Amino acid sequence: MSSKPTHLRSALFVLTVTFPLTLFAAEQMAEIQAWLEKMQQAIHTRNYIGTFVYGQRDQLSSVKIIHRVTASGEQERLISMDGTGRQVVRNGNKVTCVMPDRKAVVVGKARPGKQFPPVFPLRLDTLTDYYTFTLSGLDKVAGRVTQRISISPRDKYRYGHQLWVDKETGLLLKTLLLNERGKPIEQFVFTNIKYVDTIADELLDPDLKRDEFTWYRDQDIEGDNPAKKMRGMLVSWLPPGFKHDMQKMQKLSTNTMPVEHMVFSDGLASISVFIEEELQHDPANLIGGSRIGAISAHGRSLGEYHVTVVGEVPHITVQKISDSVEYSGEND
Image 1 (tube, rainbow, N blue to C red):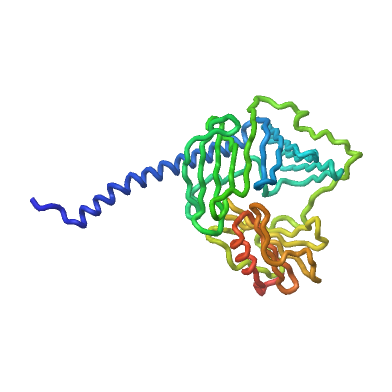
Image 2 (cartoon, rainbow, N blue to C red):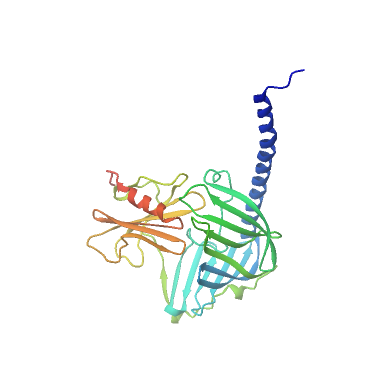
């Protein structure tokens, strides 16, 4: 009996090898998806008191966190341990920032930005074209057993992440943000954490003496309006997967003129584009590139406007986006 043709034997061999690998990859992705869902649930359902360290390299801050979930929603109090006594109290969508060193209190609505513990996307299917996800074994953080998850970018336009998830509760206990060379540039890590059944009201109260503080309310000039083309500006280049997430006009604390603020995201990383009128040369405006820890920025003049792009992404990303901003020929 003649043997099977060489090309047929090769095809059978490839199928024999790749099918188990494909099945393994699918099973691992399903497991990672389950971990993300467990993380998401833990963030919104667990009561805990702990201390975490956050920052870049040698610029680290220690913060105490108290988080409570009730029938009326989530409540949280962050207390800086660096001596300033600064606090952030979140009650649902209301955020109160207390700055004793400035005798000031700022009250506003919760907005996209840094959250503790950091929040990660719930679904993987929208991210797998731009990142690879891997289970990287068990580890210990703050005395608790954690599952480690690695997130690696598929191109040069975004950073990687390492996550440590509490194996029992699902709470995210540690993260590292990794630069283009795979080196840590930002970290969040619990040094201690205690899960509790109940948390007393007074632990979430900043205990302010109103007559000793000046109160400010942070308000936008306009609400979110993604469809509006302000000043006829257009961002003509974005990395693959980045989409328009938010657009608004607002006043920044250092500006008297309104600033157009656009946000773009791939579901994991976010980039902000600020456009402001430049009636005269302002030496405070960024020209060229800048980098502080994980934050990359690039600024340039565009006619009578100034463009600044900021994000936790490699510098090449913000530079290419900044260079792509142009007049669209449309003005409202």
